[in-house]
Image (cartoon, rainbow over all chains, first blue to last red; front, top):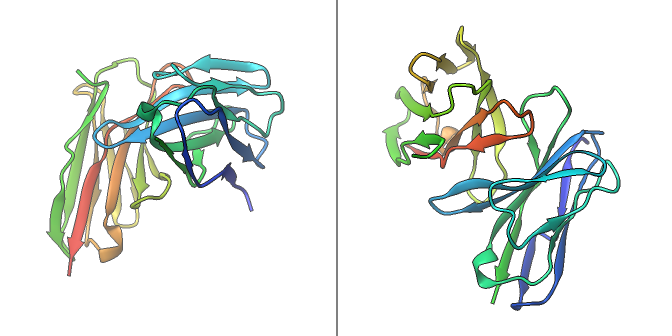
Length: 112
Length: 110
């Protein structure tokens, strides 16, 4: 089944403890992206990647890192999480020239 | 001004009603447009693309007005299962840069 898989689905962590949210797609898509969704603010892009080793900042990249060493994986790294990073995170992918993104099921992160 | 603006709703309409949402965008160079549907606590899913000529998919009709920079979604004969948040999405000149509206919440009552 074609899908984008995120892990974990839920995570509660403490301020400053490094964490990684994984994202993997099995559709051989070139484009991958991370979004966070907050009430009243909608979905905001954190980082995106157009292909292996090609990444760029979105609208809200502060406090996040990404890497794209393989086409299928696009992990999101929070080196020192803070409470304002508590949010619902979505990973998404699409093929080059394609239209809509396919989203993962989301990761609900709480930083205390 | 937000790049993509939607009325947040909620729209509360009876089953069988026709309901329409609009969405405005600020970047006149925007190239492609979509409507996504998001159920509570779930991921957004592509509902339909929007073309200048208008397009229809069953009970759903989407329109694009480039001159006035808005897109619309019309749902006819609404069903209880149509209850969701509808997200307007605009693709700028950069293929990977897509911008989401904050969404319009729709609730269909029996």
